[in-house]
Length: 89
Image (cartoon, rainbow, N blue to C red):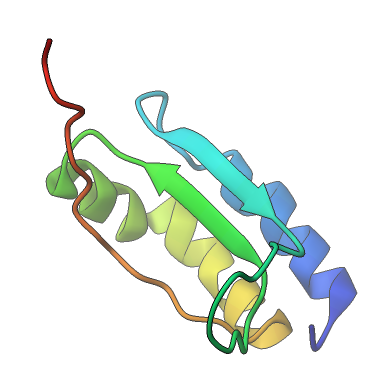
């Protein structure tokens, strides 16, 4: 964390930019590490119904207005991954 004030401002702004179909699944400040090194322990997982939905949010003017606050306040890695559907029974 480089700047707590900016990060708090980012969280306040970014949270309100998420579309209704997005789901915040995980927000963990200190996850329990089972294996391997972790350089950025904060873990946030947000589910979007489609990649297009994610990119629409990420590139939106309202999120882009907040993104620099994240980049200036905390080091991290932003990853887009495809989830899996649970098996049907």
